[in-house]
Image 1 (cartoon, rainbow, N blue to C red):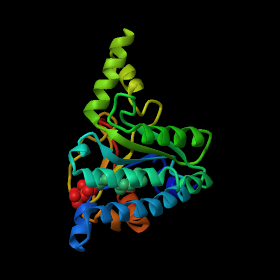
Image 2 (image 1 turned 90 degrees about the horizontal axis):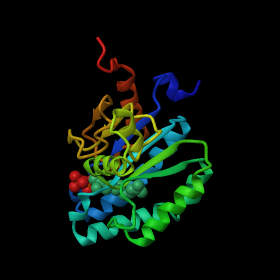
Image 3 (image 1 turned 45 degrees about the vertical axis):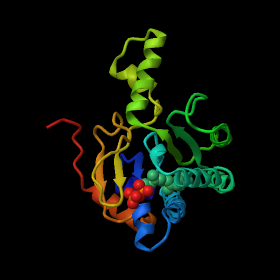
Image 4 (image 1 turned 135 degrees about the horizontal axis):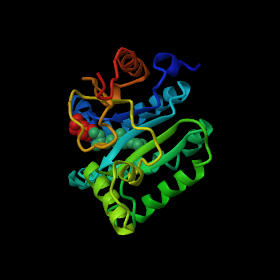
Length: 235
Ligand code: FPP
């Protein structure tokens, strides 16, 4: 039995909202982008721990459909980091047997540039055969957008809309819903992240800013989760 399953036998999927990067940077007199860079570094350390714990799925809210309204400088900087992570860091991810998948609208008609679309398609394809932790990266992702795309796909195919058909048309088709959601920085909301999938998820909010969130904080969240009584609507 691995360490994660010892903590909670049914834990298959942890979702993360990596919040507080801007405030972390501002408090230190740094530009917001320095916060995002530090965020990427803390994500790397956390991913290593998730792999070590053999957590099957971990999802990360990297860029929402609403994040396009940030300054051009911040959006450009964020995409430079994403590009770096899925090209320069790819070998490190592969060496950890990580499989990469992406949630969100990545179609030709989306706002994503052809170059980032190519990078994420190649990152997903080149790790598709890996059997360790699956990282689900939400990029140009919005929960309403995902539900509308799913419903439109079913309607176009003439498929009756049922809970099962809708779930099967989501970006997360075939992936277990998150057992635990962790949001950093003290904000207590979902901000459009996986509204369908998080319906019965345990929600953990911590005041720690994401750049300071490390493996020790993850273990605190797992210890909290282990004490939860998950009833899924039953008595
Ligand atoms: C929220 O903090 C964070 C984001 C909108 C971006 C998250 C993206 C990264 C960490 C880049 C690296 C990601 C990957 C997958 C390599 P905020 O900027 O809203 O913080 P604030 O609320 O303090 O302003």
